[in-house]
Length: 312
Ligand SMILES: NC(=O)C1=CN([C@@H]2O[C@H](COP(=O)(O)OP(=O)(O)OC[C@H]3O[C@@H](n4cnc5c(N)ncnc54)[C@H](O)[C@@H]3O)[C@@H](O)[C@H]2O)C=CC1
Ligand SMILES: O=C([O-])CC(=O)C(=O)O
View (spheres, protein in one colour):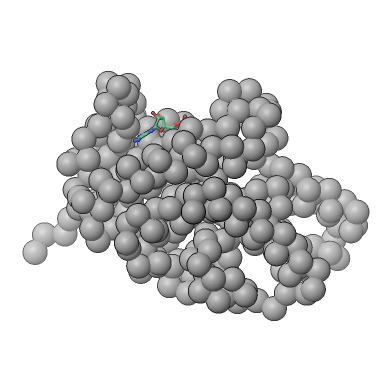
């Protein structure tokens, strides 16, 4: 039997969606379908065609189409949701909850109808609550509905640490627990540069400043852009998750996962370290936390829960 190319659909053809589509195609992870609302059909087709015309120059053979019809997404292996509104300066991610929850429900119905076996990766904010909404609406098992925040938050932390030490970003590891908000919990104790604990390389006070900048990393970009939020690093983060699933890489990355008792929480989507492979979230890794870390995680989980009460 002939081997078929993978199919990745990206719902929402705005800044994050279009950038994700291009990066997925550039890595030849599969063919890409970029979907937006009917009023945006022509611009979406235009973006897709423009990307496709970059393929001979860059030498990638992924097809990219723009559409407003979900029929074109049929039998996708992975569907990425970026549809919805983004925040502007002065807003919090939680201000987006009502509008974006409605959009999540509508797009999830269509995704499930045409790709009942797909894996869904959610980006739309407030992403912990939106991932929960998609999970409930889809009826999919928990391993097939995954939210993105930890790859991005960790990437920001790694960027700032690499700048501070003037070393390669590749040598800096870290990870961030909790919800994708200003209460997220960058775990300094589990972060390293070249295998050396960061606490041995950077004074505690300076590390705390880096943690604080990481927590507010999304807002820093929102304030600089003036009319929208980050999209290059968010798209790169989504692509890492898509690649981990399609190549069954079994990467240990922080993702937003459905908790059933892990870390003491239940019926909640929250950022935790996970193993991501060919079956989506294959495992949640539970770590021992100090009392201080537990309290920080509790604060972050409480913020996510308070957004969820609006939905319930
Ligand atoms: N989880 C994370 O780490 C991050 C989350 N985000 C979130 O991702 C979302 C998208 O951000 P951007 O791409 O910058 O926004 P954008 O405004 O550039 O694009 C959103 C697109 O969604 C489309 N859309 C709206 N309703 C739709 C529907 N029912 N079906 C299909 N498409 C629909 C819009 O027409 C628009 O083209 C926002 O909610 C933003 O806050 C952004 C960056 C990081
Ligand atoms: O800040 C925002 O609204 C977008 C986002 O989630 C991020 O860049 O971390």
